[in-house]
Length: 279
Image (cartoon, rainbow, N blue to C red; front, side):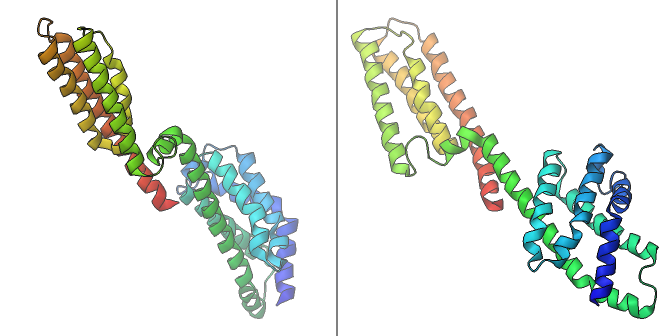
């Protein structure tokens, strides 16, 4: 049986470029691999050649799983960078295996019924090797996707996970928010009662509004409503001779911005949950 396996390995190794060209010609026009259609054919051929030339090393290795990584990870990295979907990358591997055997069959290296039977039996290791490659490509794609998500979420993800401000415990965030709201009350009292002015100190209120939305999503709107009510009630009590118009606009902006940010953060949190499931 080993003789027939060696015959197949020798054929693939010596004809790696020819098999790779046939595979590339198929994959760049196949209806199940449309993302490959726009790739340079030379790049696709090169990947095929790399695999077929590593075939002997992978097939005869004591631990083919480890040897397969030399090809699998580079294959995954290169085609992930080209934005090839995972299902297409895997189907391209299926075509790669198919062309390997089509070429061997066309060359007629297995003639008699006994040879064909023994050749089929020797396929077990080859099929296992392709299974390893498919698994490793999927694993690498998932790793690359996770890295991409981490980069894109960036500081937003860090805020949501509580790693930058307020620690990981909700009690820390609550204490910090209470301190900010207390500061807002003092600032409002100072300006409305002591200074008797509605000077635009309220732009500082956006700090707790933004943090509340990031930390608690839609529930953070309560902070916006509280601050809006604070400036309106304070104005009504202490600034009776000054028109309400400016503070009404500010109050509306507090609630509007808090609502929009809360909705956005809820959406990002849902993305985070999906990300955690798949990683």
